Length: 249
Image (cartoon, rainbow, N blue to C red; front, side, top):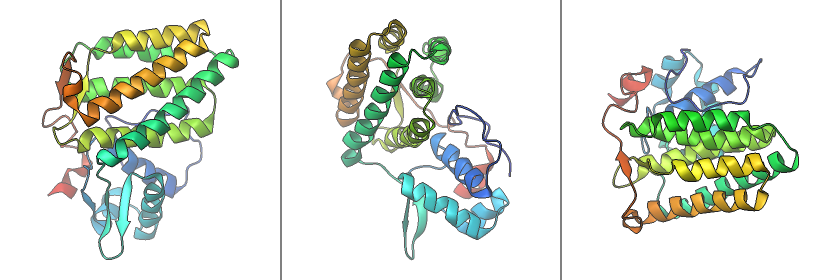
């Protein structure tokens, strides 16, 4: 089974011993995250199992795991397909993400945990935010938020955040106007990193809530932020030439 090469979900640490089911689920999860498997796209069991070099029972079990995470849908007689997110999903997805990040912020500050990962992720975001590639900016933005959760030291929060990041990406990829990201939020991200480093829990939690509320408003009505600087995704950004391309033929 070949390894995904772009837009992989970040991980806190490598799992030394992973089952085949773990690896298959991670491959498909990464493919959804980077847009190689698009919202609404059917996941053909035979061709996908052949592509990944695994048995169909192993694939089915991995898909069931992703169904339970909410990134894949399944129905008898129809098989499995990548979930398409709608307006009804926006509030719930961001409520979960906000809860995860707020708890992570509290654990970091109250536990006086190191924040080097957050600083590194902020620097990476600053280095790409002036570019014009929406997916690169979007990846760096989500990496920053993942770094906050990783610094909490909680493996369970980190696992929840990985699923939440896939849901966030699916919301963007399912948007009627196409995938787009804001590229003028570096100041608020910097303020969040500084508040966490300073141990200002109230301010940090408030910034997380603000980022979440603004994202919800933007997804519900892009016109709600007329001054926003937005970069739209272009064809070819999702890795259409990767190993999953054969499944779209």
